Image 1: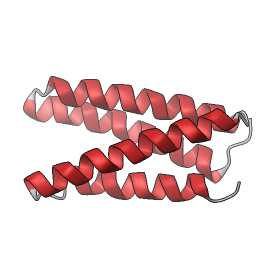
Image 2: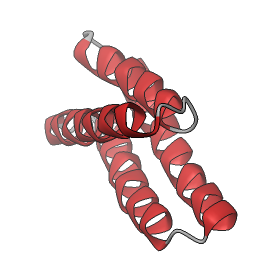
Image 3: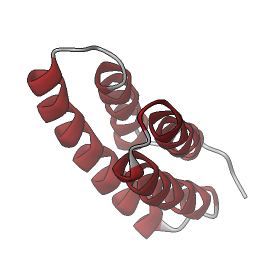
Image 4: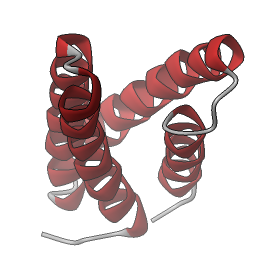
Length: 104
């Protein structure tokens, strides 16, 4: 396995998504937070592992999940006008997309 910047970014963003879902559940008992955080986080972890194994579909899947999360959290930021957690997830998603787009 080769841990390129894109693989590392996808793995880190996946962990952040899972931890964020757990925090969202702990703070507000939001089942949607833990479900969506877990599903998107596991998807990002799978994609990051695939990228580390040099499987091209991993980068495509990871970019799709990251882009979807950025869109979801932009809508949430506009709606709530609160930086946390939406702003952090937007920045993390944008950084992940940049790392994935750049050649490894």
